[in-house]
Structures are given as structure tokens and as C-alpha cells.
Image 1 (cartoon, rainbow, N blue to C red):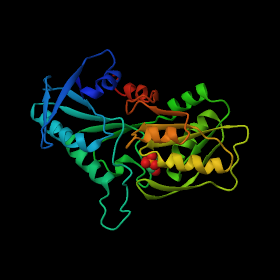
Image 2: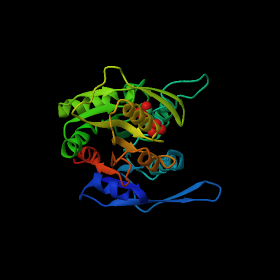
Image 3: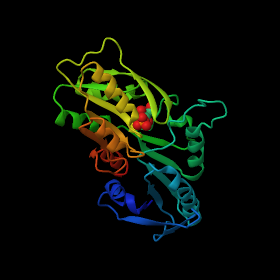
Length: 291
Ligand code: R5P
């Protein structure tokens, strides 16, 4: 079956990265009306094709409804198979009813996307209380790991690292990068009291002697997790000023906040393209579409 890649403007380059030189990437034009409704336009004929839509979802609410409309319409226009590629999959952190009545967004979004698309590809979704995307998606999902690419970056840029996860949830990534680098690692404990209010605790036995401390987390959103973690380490005379994350969401001026807090190097992968995207996590995703 012939394949057609489609992407909206701001994601054309990442989509080209995934499709390689085999094909061009078709443009999805989105116009937002004054009342917030969207009008979509595609210029390629999806009939009898496998259509791969590559979408940036770090500001998810702006695009989720348009993408559902798109999936529906592609099917009506005769697409045979619909593949959704979200290098950053949002809403996965709301993976439980933390307060009575809260919607488990990870489950709801998984079910919703499964109604529209035949398969979903992503890089390191935030899986914690949900262990596998198959628990929330009813269509096949493919997860690509950024750990090897992160490991390569650290090994090229940091001497004698010790990897620090700012909370228990980061352990899976820290452990896996550390295994590849054969270096020590440790995770801190976090208590989140609100969007901008977190408390981080360092275990008593912590020592980073002779090592360069590098934080690793999956997502930087407001930056408060890393800022608190850095401050706690400073109290132990450890200067941890390198932050590495897979998904640089950077909400609300987070980058500036991290810099002001003393981070000298902030590095993320290219699942969300921005100035900090030094780690190539899309290469592995591209391999999924080589055949
Ligand atoms: C949640 O546990 C994630 O792994 C990140 O630690 C979290 O999303 C970071 O958020 P923020 O940058 O807003 O503290």
C-alpha cells in the first residue's frame, strides 16, 4: 500500500525526518476562526493510501479536535489505514483519579484516539501507574525509547556523570540511561502540592563525589521539579546544573525560570522541536517507517 505523510506547518521538518527521502510530506493547513473553531485543508488525495499524520501535541488542546476531524475526513476520502505519530503524547500524567471525580485523561484520550486511528506511534510516553499503552489504547501502539540517544549525548558531553532522577517516576529513564553508560544513578522523592508547588527530598545516603550530576526526567513542563531538586542538592554542596529531558514542553517561561535558577545546560530531544533539542529521538522513530 502506498504511504502518504501529512503534517501541519510547524511539524513539517520532523515529519520529513520520519519519511526520509522516499516521499514528500503533504501539508495540513489549519485556520483558526475567531471563535476558536478550526477549518482544515489538505491538498493530497488519501484514497487507498496508508496515511501517516505527524503532530506536535505539547499544546494539545489546540490540535486534538482538529486531528479528530482530520482522521474522520481522511477515512471518508478513502484512506485505507490511518497512523497517528505523536512524538510527545500528552495527557499521560493524569493516569489516576488523584482527587474524587477526576477524569483519568490518559485512558479517555487513549480510547478517543483509538476510535479515529488504526495505530499510534510515540516516544517514551509518561507511563507510571499505567504500565503499557495497551491498557488505554485499543489499537496497536509502538513506543520508541529515547534512552540510547540520551546516553550518547551524555557520553559525548559529560565526564564521569552521576544521573539524578528528580522523582520516583523518572526511575525508568534514569535506570536505563545509566545501564547504557555504566554509571551511578539515584532518584529523589517528590511531593507535588500544585502546578507550581513541588517539594523534593534527597535520600540521606546521597554522595556525588568526583562526579558530574546530570538530571534526567521525561518531561520539563513548568520546570519546578528540576528547580526544587537542584536546590535540595545544593544544600548538600552538589552543583547539579545540567538538565536533560526527553520532552521539552516548557510551559509558562520554564526555560528562563530554569536558567535563572542556575541551570547552565538544558537539553531535550527533538520530540518537541525547540532550541534545546540536541538529542535525536526521531531517528529511532524514523526506522519504524523505513519499509
Ligand atoms: C512527572 O512526574 C514528570 O515526570 C515530570 O517530572 C513533570 O511533568 C515535570 O513537571 P514540571 O516541570 O512542571 O515540574
